[in-house]
Image 1 (cartoon, rainbow, N blue to C red):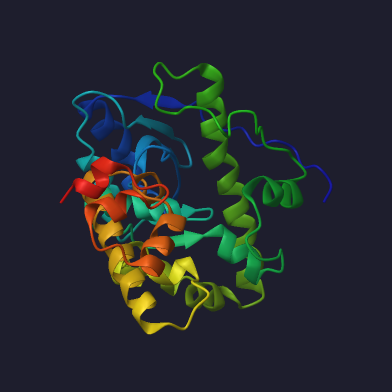
Image 2: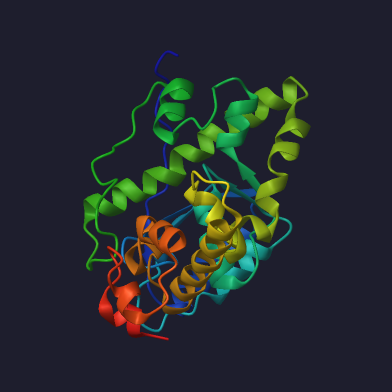
Amino acid sequence: MARTASPVFPQPRLVSSTQALEEALRPLHNERYVTVDTEFMREKTYWPELCLVQLGGSNDLILIDAQAEGLDMAPLAALMADPSVIKVFHAARQDLEIFLHLFGALPMPIFDTQVAAMVAGHGDQVGYDSLVGSLTGHSIDKSHRFTDWSARPLSAAQLTYAAGDVTWLRVVYERLHRKLEQEQRLSWVAAEMAELEEPSTFQPDPEKQWERLRARTNNRRMLGVLRAVAALREREAQRVNVPRQRLIKDESLLEIAATTPDSTEALARVRGVARGLAEGR
């Protein structure tokens, strides 16, 4: 597509206090839709550690410092639950998981531009930067994609990068929505997004985690042990908020299931199982 003129986007406003958050979000309740994105860290935790929330309105661009001391996120929860405001995401799964874990409920209603792009013929799981490029001819800054969002203070470059994830998203949403409305395919998007509206989509079932390991055996005893130890690892990882692979690796679970160690000593000999873990509860 030929490059279009750049829209004039609002100046970003960084919010780090509860009072400022209440004031900043109040006008967004009058919007037909807001664009939403998050920045988070997950390398050291089971649950995503929310660092920044970006919200784009027609006249407002709000960046919420989720790490700010004493910040009450209740005003954001109220906006996410407002049924009159559509929450627009791109590739919403991880963002929705964060909000479900934080607020105990999914944002409603939602619109995922990645799903809409698939319905519109842009291919499966198209990236945000690729979609912006194909629809507007503009490129997105990728330089801070792997930055440490938990470090403070956030730099001006980081904030500019984060803002771009919701400013151009408004352009993307409006163009996709218009195209799909003209082609009478908006209902297809709703059908594809049904899974994203179910909390169970984002709540891993410990009893099903063994399926991820793809054990190459039909031995029912081994599979039974694997199911049990994988479920135990998942519950413990959730409880202590540690990545499952950091707690104990997949390869170790498979070896435990294959050898069924019957003592602490035997368990400690399994590669990747520390003695402290073998002797633990």
